[in-house]
Length: 456
Image (tube, rainbow, N blue to C red; front, top):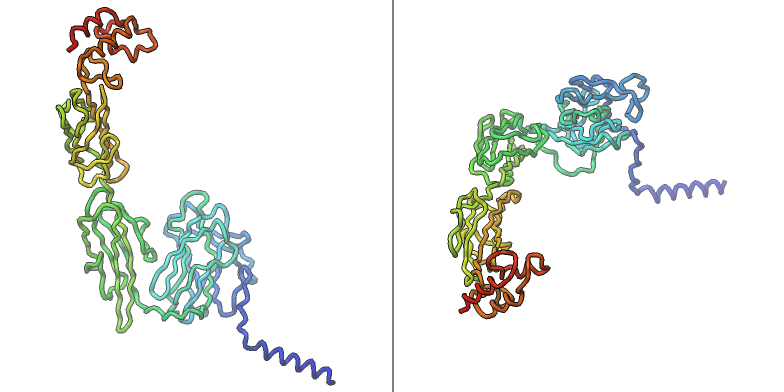
């Protein structure tokens, strides 16, 4: 008897010791859920609305209510179906939600021929959210979409959409089940049960991408080189406090004109404010307007400090010649871009400033000097070429560095005499042919006589 009493006392002591410990919530297997969770399967027609043409799927790897043996283990929309179809799961009736925060999960069967971008729309507390789900992977279990506050007014829902899911043979959409799991850990106050959404958003002068959906808050529109865009925003609830576009008051359903838009990306906020008594809710949509950068890489003017360009400058002519004397060791080139928004100008490979002269040192003979303009877009480039011909007088064949020096001297005669007898077949001909003054392919008495007559 004493032995049994000792065991009972030991058990009691252990119970007291561990009674204050908050044990972690057990992990759930693939399709388990807690007693307080609300689960709606595609087979429960009282809570499910099917819009469009959805077929039955009978394969494994999907949620199936206990005891169900029918053919519709999940629903599928074919890639060829019109892109306005959905399956709606609405907690109502005996599955009505109490007001509060819930973790929202969906179930789907994954397969290689299912879409990688299936939209899931959550409507809760008069607000919308859109999630994108890759149904090619991670199916066969509950997948968390997020935590939302539900008012429990029986109008809230979760929809599986086929909008934007693709049209290839690998773009099927699966709708299976939705789970609402109460989340008591959220301490944020509940949002006001007011509608601050837009029912439509349209632009005049471009195309919204993606197409408007109340749950999508960010859109892009390209307007090319135009500088203005019209936006028409319509508020869902006719009773709203205010609507503003780019910080300016706007009227629901009326065109609001944006002008003088900068090039590049301009983010335009569209803000809806709803107020009822002490309740307030605000929702912001953003339209990112992309005005193309300029692609003008032409020159407005081009001038030189020595001689004159030939031909005369025009923006469409890209190659010019100009003659310089031997005493001209450098030239100034001034290039003015047609657009003030150009990205860069280089002259002779060096950065230059539009409308300001750039000094380029000259070598002998022909100097090819490129003038390159890069447009604001960074991709459009136009190259002009100034060929500066620094004239060398016939007979002036040598000087410092074996280059012409602008004078006729004994050194020029010596050079010619040294290579006397060289012909076009000689290995060094490219170097010495400048002494072949009559251009007959040989350095002979005629060339020597020519240079003797010129010596100063």
